[in-house]
Image (cartoon, rainbow over all chains, first blue to last red):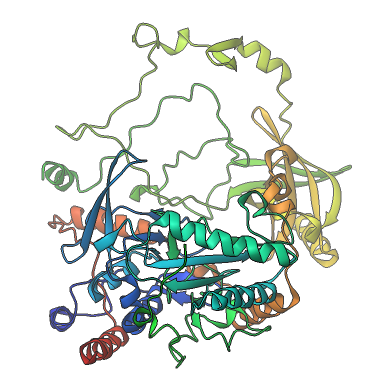
Length: 298
Length: 306
């Protein structure tokens, strides 16, 4: 089996552009829409300018699908054997595991391509950066519906969360999770601890659950049928969120997509945002996110 | 290198030494073995004649009617099997029956079959016990009834075999034509050596084939999985999307589109070694594509512009 690139001069031309190398380009990773690894690589190459700022210095959890989304999958926190030298590593001793975890940092384009070639379709980021790992700079509300409630119901609850945060003087940002739910983010000024963001999110969740049918704020009810859970527990050390613009391991090759609040009306579907539609999308609602770091009460 | 000189001397891969007679007859469902044709899948000299001699002869019996037939192998497992050799002199290794207590080799005559009832506990089964319950091998494929071919569930299909007429061309042709006309298949049993197998006989590409069937309790039904019994009903809109994707990707199936690339790669290695070529193993070949290079150039330009 030889590559499609042909003789050595092709490799040289490539080598001038990137240190990453690709394998099995023809492999189908998404069987339903028939998307190959080459198309996944092209997606990550083209989305790089938008996704890289959100990956920068955030310890990654890779969700790998080496044989595509219908094959076996696994999460990987540790840099795998054979990780090339251009990949930055963030070593952390994990209290729970009692050993060191060598997190991958996707701080350059070559690393992003290397990750895509590993079929790490989903990239999950921590809510804090390496510079102040104990201190979150994202406040996260992870909102998921339990059937028979749907994405439309999540949209309504998201707007309620937005209003509550607005009452606190906050400007939240929202993205599709790419699966069933929505992620609402408030970028924070430095100095918070996870117990503070967790308590804040819990307080908002409880207030909404009190007045809103179907909404639950407590973990034991989080999987009750016909409920929507506002998950505050994700605000914790070591927890992650799928990165904005990351692909998801869903049949339709959806993308976790930042959206404008105005776009988020009943009838919008997570499946509208896929590997095929995102690149031609001109809206970039999270563009100013890092210029709008905010303070929360408590 | 050592191995290559051996191969050059003989011009062949060392042939597998015939295995000793099997201790007990281990038959997997669907693998009929009357006169074992002595195949070791994949070895280059095993080019067995597809349309060659039958391995079983008998007759299809429908009530009082007999149709004498031969049974031929239809599918061949072409996966590679390797023989274990001694690294120093490339001699094939033999497996011995070794007593788990003292590690000494036990002669065939001192062996007996055992059925494990609990871990480490066996009931000894004498050859006479088995002989008493062995079905009579009367060289008959007994047909019990005819069913619609499409009512047979493919998950129960074992191995197919080709039936050819044994100086019974007219009766064979009559049976085949009638089955095909009616869209039916004949269901019955065949007894080979010590076992009886449920089988189905049906028309296929101008002939009749016999396919062994798996017993009901050998097949797991998907509804044994809770995850499957509790599947949600898809929403109509999603279903519509899925239907559209499926119709867009619909095509004609041809098994010839698929190749055993692993086997082909192994064959290549074998042939190269036979030709005395030095084999250079490549690490997974880096691939490129023009589209990716173009995309990368544009992205690098965009990142630099920031």
